[in-house]
Image (tube, rainbow, N blue to C red; front, side, top):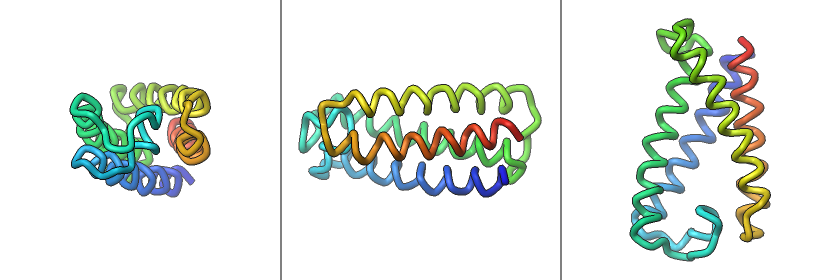
Length: 125
């Protein structure tokens, strides 16, 4: 079950990484990210989106490792990081629900909820 949850989370995270890479490159999809206030992101938010891509890849690697699909899943670092990731993703639900952007609320809040649930399944393994 944890392997399936980690794979589901990885697919979602990779989709989010593509979205963030797109907005970092100037795609007019800003209504989905960073509070939805900008159609095309300003430079500082583009940098944030580029950093997000790296973080999403790291999140996926931690979850895949904890689920036993990559080595090191039983190390203290991976175990603790998985729980921290679950907490972060859970807070992300609240942040996305509080967004002024209706599009962000309706797309990213459910996405965050699925990610948090998947992270919880993996963390409990």
